[in-house]
Amino acid sequence: MQLKINGEIKTINNFAEELPLETLLENLGYKPQLVVVELNGEIINPKVWKSTKMKNGDCLEVVTIVGGGS
Image (tube, rainbow, N blue to C red; front, side, top):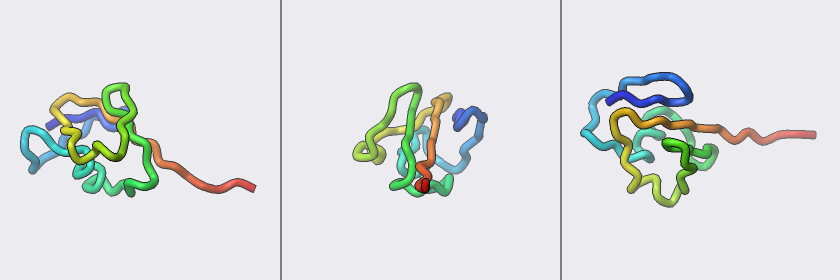
């Protein structure tokens, strides 16, 4: 399966035709509580990550939330 993740084409192997978004994020090393996810131009609520299936050719943007300030 090929996905465009944060502007880069990545080949994801060893998964079925449809891969749950939550599983993909875990395998990419993201911490679910610290990211906002956009799939094909739409922000995806974390409550539906398990039921949201990634398909070949999908475009994913993952933004990591960083705390801090003065």
